[in-house]
Image (tube, rainbow, N blue to C red; front, side, top):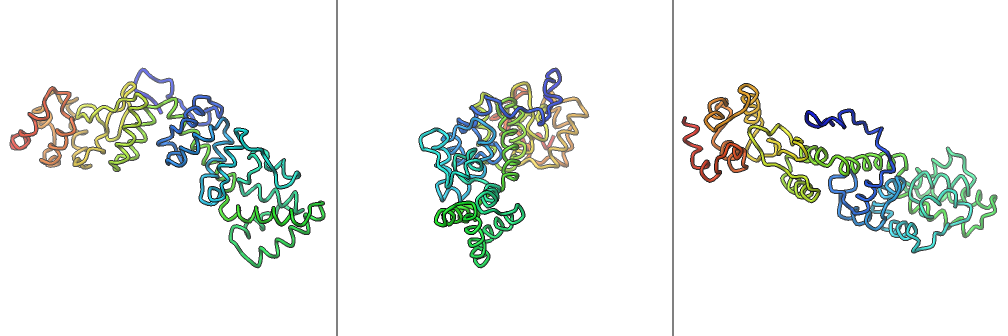
Length: 331
């Protein structure tokens, strides 16, 4: 993640050194400013983040698990948000489950919580609890009937009334159809947080990488370029003397990558980069045409380069250059 020469504070950047309590990152997440952020960029997810106002890493883990058809269909994401902000009282299916559900405001969010509930209330061993989780996830009716009897009996031994035990079993079964395991969503959450950290602290590098990844998707390129501008990151136009294969960081700006220029293929880009390395750069248009391998540059490529502004830095007008493309190739 090194910047250009002379700006080396992030040359030895490592994700393991990123603190998980960065206030700036949580401010970014709370604004829903997560375009390009792993797992968090959909409009619905951004709305959920704005409602949740995450303040800790556990909130990010929960969001990744809650923003799924099952939990959302049950309104669990709304309950989680309302309870976090104290607008709704946190309740538990049974007092014995407070230790399992307190971190998620009484809401079952993870598969591991299903297993813990089975252990605490139903007297299951850890192995039995995992079998229950799998049976619920696969919706095996016969097995579910057998497990219900087992759970209710175990709960009775722990002093839990049959009606309460059945209610808790139904709640677990409904959730387990769609539930995420915490280890999985924690890994998602970590990558999401790290991506958000990059956007907050290294925005130019973030957008250069993001635009490079999406360089073949014009709609995404336009979307992320607009987002970059909102973050005061200028995206410079393509330039035959400065653009690389991919988007690159130049100071605090991003230089457009040649792979994202429509009409300029891999062979043409390779020819441009080879010629530039050989001659040390192009001072004039004649210099460009004189050094380039014209067998790999056709009229369409030159027109695309003119239209996107790749020769602007030489002082030429696009309008003046465009009619000259044929003559340049003949020369």
